[in-house]
Image (cartoon, rainbow, N blue to C red; front, side):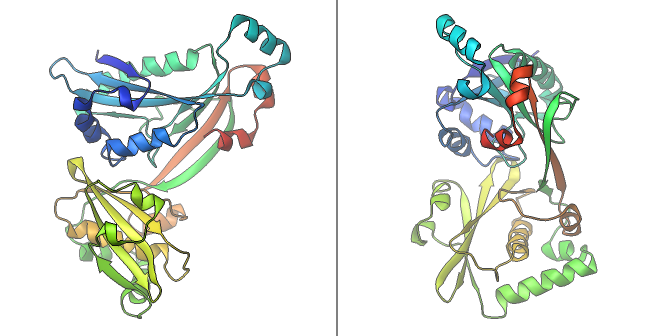
Length: 336
């Protein structure tokens, strides 16, 4: 079995482990700073549990997992008599357990491939312990391709929502031209139309490798200052419309995010996606591409673009009848 260490904040984790953690999560999460931001922006009633897994050969972590507990308001989720008893017993209150990571694919665990089998054995016990906590009365799970074995769907689920997203693209073509030739005719025509509007119609200008400090300030763009990034600015006659941010991370992973300065229906998701794909294929060392922005595409549209479509199941379970009676579908969104 692996050795496990638990933390309640990323600030508690030794700085010497941060590089190793970045390597573990690099397929979905750009950096340790990205994890820190995800923790800091949550309200104070959110409490985090982080687990590092260690083998018996190196003192560096070979796995990382995260959970989130949300303190629930007693007046909404606890009967009056029980609230009175809790005050006498100094009960800590009831909690909502969230099993979901901060990345777009919601993975809550990452292991070195050789340690995955042992890691899942340890993680199975941790998941069971977290669910069995007496203060946990509601459990939210995000189950994707990597986590369905740990988070099986069952009849106890009160609500279930399905989410579609674009998965991580592996570089199976040697060039953007080869990728373009693989597209269905109907899709390639849409791509051509997008390129024409973006580069030849004189509506937009694309500027490569823009100095971030010279761009107009933007809260989202500020997230990536200090990261290993490249940028493209898309401008019209009035200035910057959007910026494409390319974050180059460990293990040959490229992450792409889109920063918008104003709404412009002429700048379509197709234009942004194709710009990112061309940059990805033109970068020889990058082998995996992960989009940090969600696009409103159907499964068929994603597949026609040669991208992986990933289905995520978000579900909610109550551990007692009273909580089951007062939980609503809106709570799933309110506390997530």
